[in-house]
Length: 178
Image (cartoon, rainbow, N blue to C red):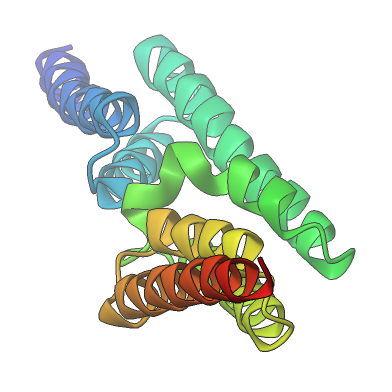
């Protein structure tokens, strides 16, 4: 019984460590901060408890909560992948938005961000080529809001300058026509 008490105590400690990791993960999601690693750590603690005693009630409860969080994350990524495959980039981005801060920890999140950013940059460039300046600016601004890059910022500034030039040229043409 002393042996069982010691095992139970150690399982409790491991479970509490797993719970701390799960709470750190939830806090990261809520604050939109990096922290995907905390979910992975919580899974490892659950696995350790299950390897020792799969029927330990606090361990089973924690495993259920970790599984629920993991399933929510995976479902968001799966939905994003489906939307991305259907060329619904904004919808794909919306699915990963709660996990955006995990982009450097989870390549699948980064892939959706990059694809959505690329979509808006490409669309902005096409609109710019067609001299549809306001729409081009809007697309470049969307790209910049998705991924802060000098490329997107420069594209916004350039399109804004070209819009001013187009407006000034139109005004000059009207003045000359009068």
